[in-house]
Image (cartoon, rainbow, N blue to C red):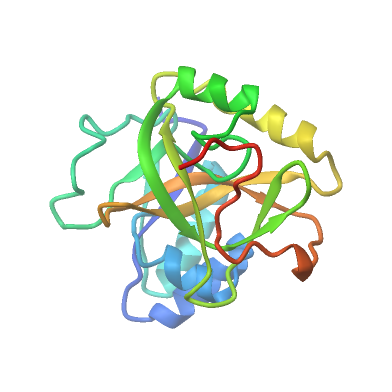
Length: 226
């Protein structure tokens, strides 16, 4: 029986790269720099929802010359999440991987960071395109403005405990409730060894002051020394 919903994965930009990247930018509300960065690491999950809606969206992208695939949930994780990539050399999508950069970092002393470290498998350190702001008790991730904007953190694999995503969602929204919540969105992480993977990340939706910009891209409050 065909599932009632699916994930839509962009697997190839096709000949009209600029038009496809522009549509991805619009769909995911990205900056030009982030849209270019994310689409350099395909496959990329661009949407999920009802099959009718995914069919409509797929047709829209295919009309631009792009190639897409459906990924029905629940996902089946890669048999070897530490392998280098697909046979084509493109990064694997890791639907159970999450990038954390603040109070959930491996070196953070926050109790929730310890819970995450106990529940999930630490993959390693990494970085994603973005700008980091100190909001006081926690940092906020915003879109990059240039190719020099990077945020540093840790990658965890939740494939053994996918329900933990619900706990993380609740934690993030408790820290900063609506109308300025954190929203879990797709992103591309670059690991220390150069591999790139599609992961989840929490982006801050509120306003920020440039005075609070963390130029190093690393939030160190309440963290053990590196």
